[in-house]
Length: 356
Image (cartoon, rainbow, N blue to C red; front, side):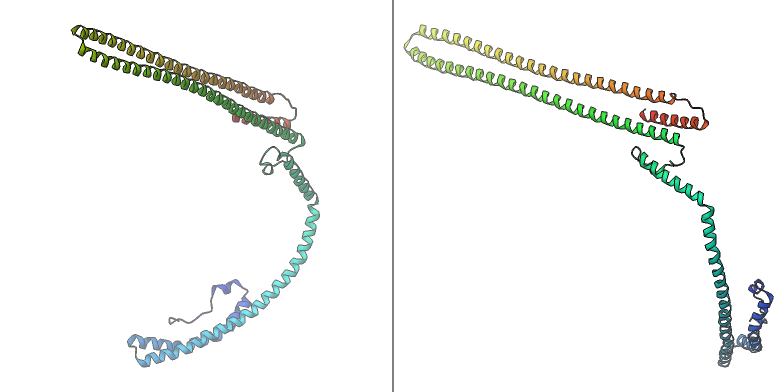
């Protein structure tokens, strides 16, 4: 209240008719008068509280609060009662509105259906044509359903479908050729590996045989050497025994024989070393021959791969030339077909760029 007289001047009242606003004010006017009757008592309690708050002042404040609260409670009851009345009127208006709208909407719907009959038929035709063309094109491209096909003229569509079909055929052909080349390369590698394994096995067997023969010869020489050593020892023992019985002449003869045997032994050792050097030279020659054969095979494989690459490059060049020739192969008179053929040329350029 703040020492001011309550006025029913809510801004919402200005939004409705004056008669309705006056009626609302008249309904709540008695409560405003009742509230103004408490104005003097309210001011007195506020003044006493500002001077000092006593038990008597608090009792007065409670009593006045309860009395004033009755105004608020009564206001709420009037508000609910009046709102229900206006709500019933609003519901009645809405009901009438719904009846009229229902009657009009049904007629509008039927008239609109008649109005758009041919447009609906055209929409159905284009939808059917789109589905038919998607089914045809989806055999050659993965995203046929995402393309606007029904808007194409018949000759444009036929050229477009033929181009996609040919591109798909070319792609399949290229994939088959690539697979054939891959299998041929695998087979060539397999044969090369088998040939190398066979040659390596042959060289291994030859080396093993040479090693076996060399070992036999070495064992034979070792046995002969030991046999000679045994014989020499026996002879030396015999000579040593005879030396005891012989004179100085016999001792000189034994020394001469020992010197001769030493020379023979050195000669045998030299011959054994020469044989070993000969065998090592043979093994080195075999190893050099094996390395040369391996390098020859590798060079031949590299040459074959180079020839295959050259063949593929010629084929790729022919493909690009054929596509370039297709851009200028036809000539059209109508603007529409010229535009279509230009678009086909752009698609061919994209294919050539993709190949590059």
